[in-house]
Length: 231
Image (cartoon, rainbow, N blue to C red):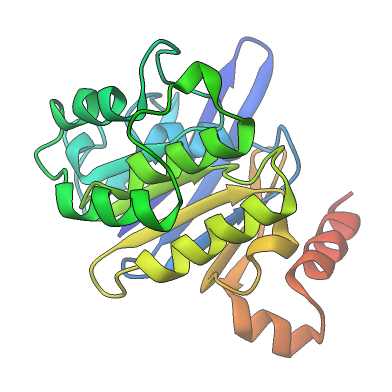
């Protein structure tokens, strides 16, 4: 389980997280939903051990993210590859850092996503780069997978392919996925738990299906209503 205990974080005058408390249960696909600038990326970077709280605690299975980085696979929103690399070189680069790299899984995903090892990062489309990020993230056997805006700025067909890949490769009971996005309608059907975040604070959280049944609305409509009342 991943837990935030009254976490606050500032960058200069900007409040990224404000007394943020939340739990992401193991074995689920969780959605961290909110508008741009809500604090979603900051929260994921804290889980990945890239940022530290100013106050409060972040725990992964009771331990520090800095001590348990190897349990986390992180797909950031920005491209993070060297442009001169091809997919094979990018894979070998990651493999040198992570003992949980799964070469068989890498080959299967490569074929499923219709990618080629010789494709050069600088020469492929934005949609293909999104698929490469997914490929390299899911080729690890990490128990926790973090995805920061994995659908941002890419075409509808590529979005569908990414969603299908997540469903296909999710190992229920063995793995936990956290998807941070404002593209809620795209992932509504695959998330088990949701946390709505606004201005660095939790506005609402719960089981996705329970919330839909209780309120008779989609998750996107629920978020709009929660934020409207908060505002």
